[in-house]
Image (tube, rainbow over the protein chains, first blue to last red):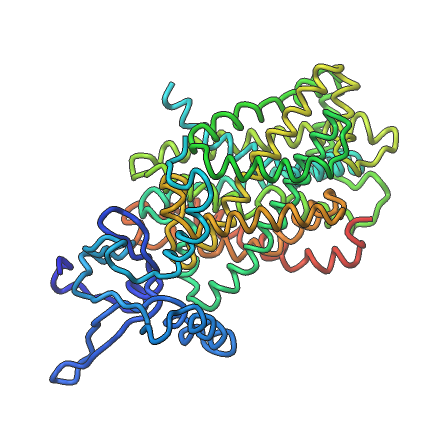
Length: 131
Length: 409
């Protein structure tokens, strides 16, 4: 972690709902939720960024939240757990959260991959940058 | 020269964002019914859009984050989602209106029914979003849109009594004998048309795509303070020509053709051709902006990769949203609903949604955490707060006035 020692990080203000970017500057996801664990002295610490509709749904709350979570459940492969990015991969907490692994190797956004493979890649010109 | 080119983003935003189908129609309509007595609403709108676009550009330059990115961060996921739903619907409705506008402008040029042009217009818009580079897009549509300057020329050729026009602007009174609710309904429509939220989505996202940094704040300001006032000037010219030619003859604008009529009367056929070219460029530019903005809003809320600088494959869900919005926009107009009506409603609903967009911008641009020493100055904050009140008043009054006046009839 290169986050400066002694800096106070407010989970709500500085982590939740921030954009996560990879080393190539590609956007990965938002911080939809956080996974916390307790250390031996009972103090909570952040272990992972959770993402996807199943992570966002409970935070939305109410019927809408249950809907979002249920849609996420439907879209996910069977038995696939909620996508998470281990917090040890986080290299910077600024106006975006930087992670050290490229988007393609994180394997956390299966829906993007599905849409890419089944829809966008089939349209001519999808592999080229704009002219 | 580079400085000059860098203003192109502002000119495109202004031509496509400020002078879009909503503005063409509303300005012409208001000019033909109320003269210049509502010019103040456009002027107030120009100040407002300059103020908030400058803030959103500055936020984009300093933090590298576009407007909708920050909406969720500040409002939280639930209120952010409600905001997204409203903004997205209005953006797609505006997109539909713009596609209708392109088709109507092409009908003017070709006498081929606009419905036949709609699918072609939709396809062309989507192809440009899919394939054409941002800088080309800016320069081409910015420059072609400048053809609308012909309205200013027409105004000059009509050689009106300038003092009389100035008097209408400075000492506004309702000339038409129409009710005050109708008068204020159109004031809100003009204000909404000037401050449409997609303008800041597009402007800030464009800044992020061009990798603006702190050093580009000057460029951003130049864009804003040249582009939007230029747009404002064009819409005032449209209103003024309508006021001079149509109002005395009791012709009310209910079609795009009538907006161009004063140009033909004042400056002849070639000028009318230029006006039609300007209509096509302005509505096409606005269709691009709204189409992209629909994708920007959704992708930025959910944190997906977005933008035109990466290959479409790398921003798959963003392009899926843009594609779906394009289809929805084309389908809406193909129902044979009157595109001018769609435009009028999109402008009024924009007014309703204004606070959702502009409150978070004001909050973020005061946040030292993002902005460091580039936070708002005292003047920006004072004006920003005043405008926030205005925007809330307009939003609250819009729907009751629409119902009370039967949408201005």
